[in-house]
Length: 366
Image (spheres, one colour):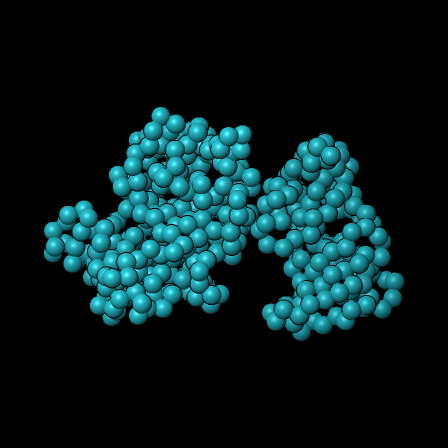
């Protein structure tokens, strides 16, 4: 049962903290993504897990054994881990089969065992028919499969992937993330995956650690990250959203032009709040008079379409509120076509109003 445990992990370069007190625990077979913008510390964290960087503070344990601390690190080749880089790093002078078996040969395993493991791994990644080809004869997606197969063939305790799909075009990225998920399900290897692409992380992860400025903003399942973000950064980074400032007044939340009951199960003192409202939760209804439609469980506001963009699978609308305050964005199906300037009713389901927990701290800082 492979367990990877990071405790208080920090990496400083002078006064700059690239990684700042990160703690997390991966259970056996879990797929965790480190998600964040460039320079947030996710790759530095991955390289500390791999043993390429010594932490300034904190520890890394694998199956209860300390493998990294400021006192020293277990070398990468002795950590029972495989790492896949952005560049694939497959050998151009070796065939597919030779590349996949390279690490096994370095471990000096018997030739018959190497041959069996290579054949089995190539079968799983569906590259058996390309075993005798060289990298220059392969597509980018096939080269990526070779890199994955070489890493898997070693049967590591932990697999580390550093933005492995960044060099592929959009269609290949979608295909390969499905392949990575399929291979993880097949082999069940504990995996840490670094990416700045939220759709990748959402599609393949058991949990996601959203990282900003070296710190974990939120660590949660994809569903909860999207539906219940707990910080402004997490709400903005995972998907598109409307962030609306308001105030808590007893059991109600008050905003410019409307109010709503505070979400069930939430508490807190009266004062400023920040809420997230996802664009696809809003419903637009044509407005021909001043009588608001009765839509159970929703706040209905008068407004108009300020701008719109057709994105194929949806319309993206910019909305102005007749009651004033900040505008909203809404997503609508292609068949519901509202022209720019159209008067509309904007229905905001009360269940779609999600409290973001850091609002009072943000106002205090200002």
